Length: 104
Length: 133
Image (cartoon, rainbow over all chains, first blue to last red; front, side, top):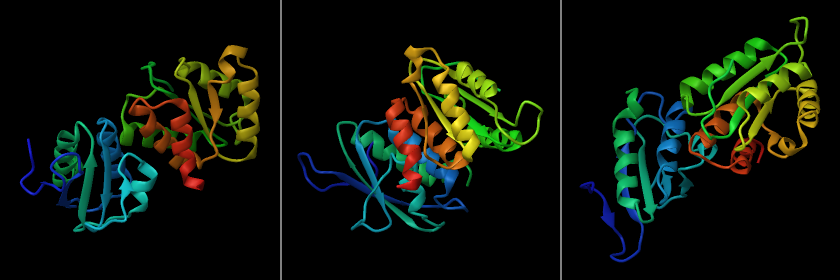
């Protein structure tokens, strides 16, 4: 499954990128950060996030670093994913964000 | 005060206050889930504020597995009593139980998050200690 907004920046081995808007009220606070990092950790791909398409990029598998981003509701989360299961990883993190981490 | 072992690194919460230890454990359960062995202890032997080595030892035993145990502590005595408890463990287990240099509540949640993904004891400790990095 490939997200409509996802794009391959390099046809061979470059990272996949895509973005999604944070819809849940509290933004990327403690609980959503934990859910996001747990999801990210279930993939081998390197997964990074940022508030702009240019970075700075944060390791999405580090709960402390993800919380420090302090992304509020309405912010656009950009993801950059590299690895063999990158497409599945990207789809999973985007779904989690769009679903409001199950708490809306 | 415990949960069955899962092959993941166990988490022990040690506070001077049983209420804090219990509350931090509630946060871990709600935010991280049940995939992590978790135990907590708080208060001195008379039920007042403080910590006691026997209680800490029992908590470590509860969550012990060869994956190891990360101990999160609050102030002074919690740390020294936890270190004493580790020293009282059988020799072959001592190296697999670590006291983290991290805030007790935040550290417990982060350590459990790391553990829930199957991370090693070293990775769990490192992640919890990122708070002071």
